Image 1 (cartoon, rainbow, N blue to C red):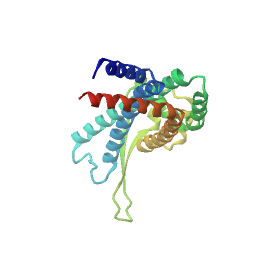
Image 2 (image 1 turned 90 degrees about the vertical axis):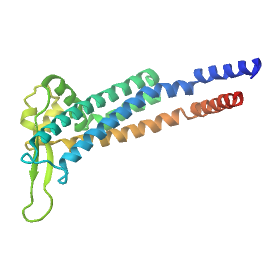
Image 3 (image 1 turned 180 degrees about the vertical axis):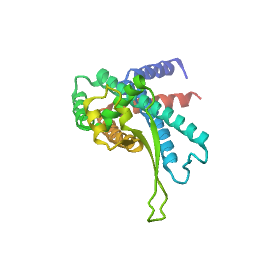
Image 4 (image 1 turned 30 degrees about the vertical axis):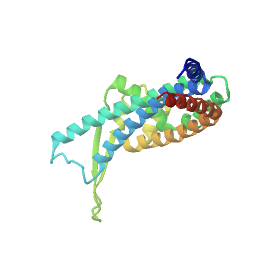
Length: 238
């Protein structure tokens, strides 16, 4: 590559790095990593819950108390990590919108959608409160319920449960969380809570990704064209 071509190549590289499409993709990177971390923690927690609640893999106390105790410890660890990842994702999303779309239609649409999807969704409020519960009250007491239908030969129904009475001893639940907990009979099934929150979250981020992709489509297409030129010049150098 001669001097003239090299200068052209460097100029293209600088164009790429200063291009709005490049800035957009870079700004999404941290946020997207948070989404992946959340997804990984959800997969681990839900996978362990499925393992414990599966009649084929369930460990009764009389069979292996040590292994059962280890599973509870793992369950609490995964729950802690999941709650932390959920809070980090929410924080990174707010930060992304604040710094990139605070005064435009995207920021306005985001605020409206958060109100629509999350504000009245009690599992969302409860998950947020659980993060504070962990910080101040420690691990919630959990148990496993095994129930049988004596009239059939169906496998037992196994559920990982949190005791509502124990949860309500903490005095800093929000009013919405407190009302929801009191509406439960005596226990809260952990897998249902996590699944409800997760499904709501997936729906929201699907909407947000589509909104941002449409908004920045032209910028990204322009960036891709510039990047293709850079790659062609690099290939020609070889």
